[in-house]
Length: 236
Ligand SMILES: C[S@@+](CC[C@H](N)C(=O)[O-])C[C@H]1O[C@@H](n2cnc3c(N)ncnc32)[C@H](O)[C@@H]1O
Image (cartoon, rainbow, N blue to C red; front, side):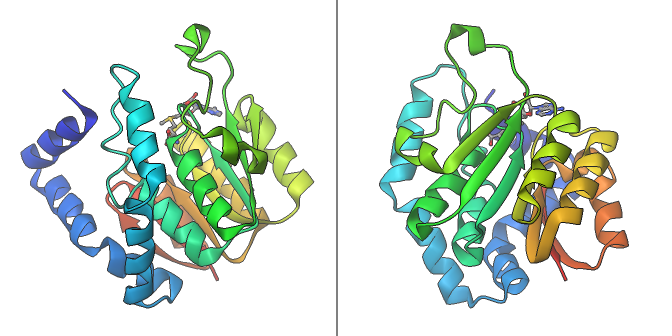
């Protein structure tokens, strides 16, 4: 069963999850517009820009070549395409992400940086992951032409994230999609929030796995929204 079908069948069996999914699906453009103070028309244009791009067609083609890899869930509008839209609106210069795997999120972020003609993405993932030995190098989906704006750091975020953030000193955008344990999410959010500039954005996938995102937005001065499993917090 594909990830999309799995998510849908979980959502259909659980009315609360189904409600959350439907709410995100019907409101994601309005949510992004409100959070970023951008007009709905402009937000619409950015979503149109990404979905009509050759880039998405290329990503689908490339991911279809690898059997067993499901690209459909990441293409849900309020997942990777929303990363693209937020980066087009915010035009961040220094971005950090944890959790790369095949590189879906990294590729959408890097495409936005290409179109913006500015910005650099620093990504952290573990070395020696299953499948890498047969040539599935971390970030294999990322087009070669985007890699000049990308730096990949291989190692646990617990060790490498503090060092990276200290070196960068200030960041505009942080995306968490690595180990979703409560301890690791709290650790990454605390580190990233300290270096995030005012009006910068912290995003996290799978926020329903623990209470870490809820605690963050309760304790920090920020505006935030949830799009099903994705949380977006803007520092005030
Ligand atoms: C859900 S996948 C990331 C998917 C990716 N963001 C995408 O859109 O294609 C999670 C990734 O986090 C990495 N990871 C897990 N624990 C980690 C840790 N402690 N530090 C850094 N990366 C970690 C895994 O190796 C895996 O590649």
